[in-house]
Length: 191
Image (cartoon, rainbow, N blue to C red; front, side, top):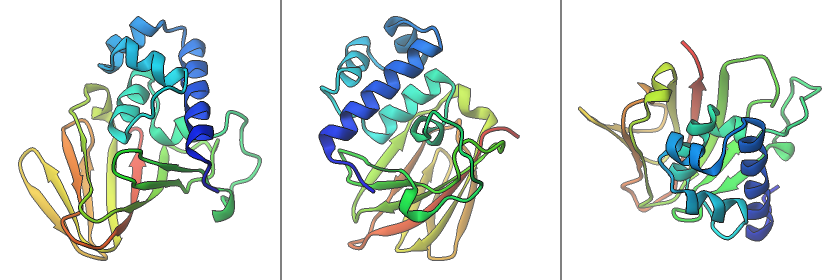
């Protein structure tokens, strides 16, 4: 179930602060590792700002986590089954895209599966991230049209298409159509 914006901002802020503290990082250290300003990290932790998907990905990178791990509950899961009604949702405040963590949390697997509902005309850009060079992903389109813009090529995905890619390089997700796109990202955290 999707939380209200203020509840979600508080939960994200508390989670970020908890993960930063458990990693033994100061605000300055996380800022250096993530490329996000100290002031912005502080504002997010105090629930005064909503991070975009790209910003949250950079913070997760600085913490050595994936977005799925960031949104996973802290307590280990007791079930290998992830029911749709219990899967965590997060909406990007800028683009409005909806991210659903499909994989059962806390399982001993390097793979995360995420479902995305991507609005018409939306674009999300991810900068190059050296720490992510060990990670790969498949982008599998179910509905709509999706352009995956990489450094050396743009791939237009149609329903049923699947693109494999490294995530250490810069890339964009772009929906060039007037209809939403729905796709899965299957992320492998280590080769």
